[in-house]
Image (cartoon, rainbow, N blue to C red):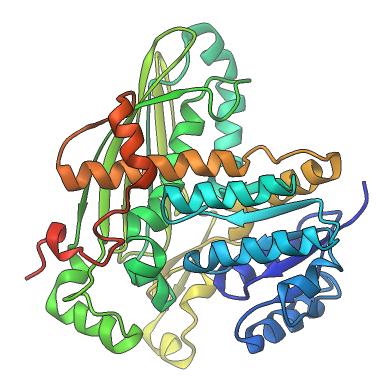
Length: 417
């Protein structure tokens, strides 16, 4: 297998996290970076070179970089996705020889945008990878392997529950529903929906084997709707939740149908930006006939205690755990977060797929289906009713639907005082 020269678009938090993951993957190097502003790309490139992860040339634009790499990864904000893909496609049309294109979750903010992105890559026959790291988490894969005999004899899982929670995003655009695409449902619900669907899927079946039947969901603005916290958002990020609020809590249930047996199974998801505990928590469990599993990312083999005096001397909360909000007390520490969350494994999958000339396990069409489920969840929350995904009218509506929260009209559904 030849070494894949990867070009990265974007230099924010997720790009840095992927760089940490690439350090653990063979046959890939970061050959180029481009971002706005250029200073971010320069800083990331310096980090990449320091750790020997590639030449990491900083390019002034996407078209220039595309001529010097084998594949590109979009780690830029959601609102910039279509423009970026258009630039990539134009570069390919002008001769750039790319093996594939990666997009970090979510694929798009709504169905029209997702359809447009797929239309663009199809026009130049680019292979795709949709980066949903939780599907590749080693605990997820390990429980599936361990329970494979039980699933074969007793039947597949019937219920999964998935959640991702932390205290809130790093960057201002994440909090702005018109730029991000919504609130925590758009940001993290896509994770929990994907891993729930994947975990319910019988062994040896493709990721989209189970057919979505219905979605029932609720969205709420709880902590970040309180006056003192709205003020903090406005002062720190310039986002005014008295005018354009987004949800900081969501929960729901998706029903799927096994097309071979007719069996219906359910996946529950819960996400929040109001988890003021150790830091980011991923929790998944599942139940089948006679067996079960449970995963909690805060269960770590390493614990550290930092007293008040030591904490005041050096505040470094996120060295312990992503989105950690404390630098003192008893801390849960994950020695290798990138590996725990599945990042190296999804990168390995994309490298192998592009080398073979195929889409990754999770292609952009899979990302399109996740987008549809997220949109159905927003529609369910707005209507306060279950959305029947087998209804042709609902299917048609979802193709053009833009949630009120995404439109900046969250006041109509989030009851902001």
